[in-house]
Length: 638
Image (cartoon, rainbow, N blue to C red; front, side):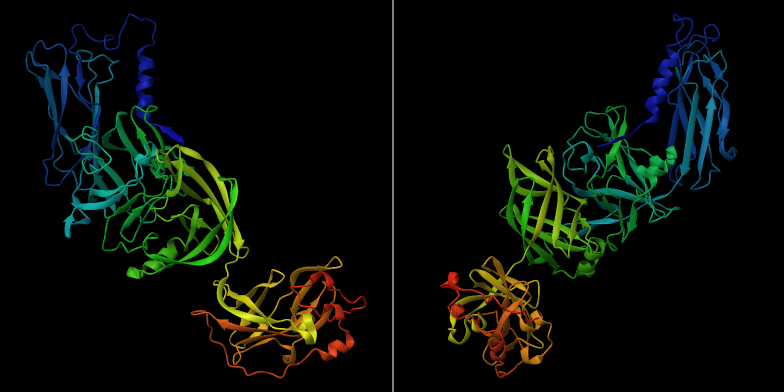
């Protein structure tokens, strides 16, 4: 929470106090110097008044004036200092004998609608005031404005006009209250479309308040200038009428403050928007202050970015709710390296798909946030983390998910997670997610900020079982080896593997179901011979051949994968032959593949003549691994 500004009235009062307490003669008090003997000591009740009047209201006003010396009937000379367009006429100020109070009346019948007018008057005659008094001038500003009730809310199926749905994120600057949505009266200037005022918002309708925490006797307005829908701001510090033991609370915007102080850095990036009938502001773009807290210092507000005022519900198109409008499917199983827990654990990374097409809400959600993702139960079962990622890998937090419960507790209090989107990132190609998260207890006490990293760990779903025959490895004496699990990656259409294929190592391959072409990439068998790792790949991959005769494929008539395999070290391949995997698909795991009948087996005999097979290798690989040896004079196939 950063303090930005001290309200100028506080400074003005402080300056006056210093001036009043200084001087050459400490026995002289303000109001006694340079005044005539027995002067009336006249004072205005207020220094200034600013008001708006409906065009139908009377064009008359007055200010109460007091005097301390009530002897005699007097007429006090009043000097007009400022009179916009000479629109004001001022009546004489008179006191009857013994009268301590009188009204200075003024009139403005020719004031135009929508234009502000100011009258400034002063009393300076030493018979009536001291030149050191601070209450001998008065300023009155009036604007004749017609305000129209706008917006509506629906309560029990009935439309209630003149009220707007408002989501609060200002009081949260100082107090741990939720971002409540509640109705507020809303009006728009008749002569200035897009200029709004919220009426008595922080009063009886604000559920977080108790009786006695707001002023019910007067009206309080929050003005919002949305005449330019791309540059929305609160032009002045607005008294909310709310007092929660720190004096009246005020709201403002960074842009309004920046305009007042000519600070462009306060303005840049802090305008709100008026889109689809809704007014919103960026995080930190609003200000909140309390009279008795650091001299009405204003502090960053709207820190969750939740401020939302629905002006026109008919234009407020539905945005998908990440908590109710999405289904999720597994993207990948990751390893979560948690700096909070100082531990690693598996966590499922899931992609969301909107199932609600109301107002094209799925499209609108994507345009606003990107794609919704879910980290499933990273800290406790049943408690997920939701966030969005756009096509540039930028992480953001949809409205309503600013603080998410984690299922953890700290000193018997629930722990919440607040994802910092700006400090988080996602690498789709490397499948690496970094979430910077600040954790809070239920009272809003920060438990610290931690970086949680999720690295890719593929998910494989079983789609069948099968029998594998190691021809290339076992030669002519190969026997079928049953009981292998056949799996598929749900995130890739062509990625398959045979689990625990070679001494626990899987065999991963791609299967193009349009052509039935199989590709076994160069991969380790996790087995070493004489200190050298044994690798495997299909023949065409190992040698760079594009021969159809040696192309691995799927025989759909026999439900058999035909692999023309090469085994060898990283530097040389030393034997090639067909190997087969006859698969039985599980229910729901079958695939649609182009029908290809069996091809004549292109056996590896020619290769056997060139590369005589080591007789010690004619063993079932799962039984006598230590007896397998490579030929010393083997030549590379590629």
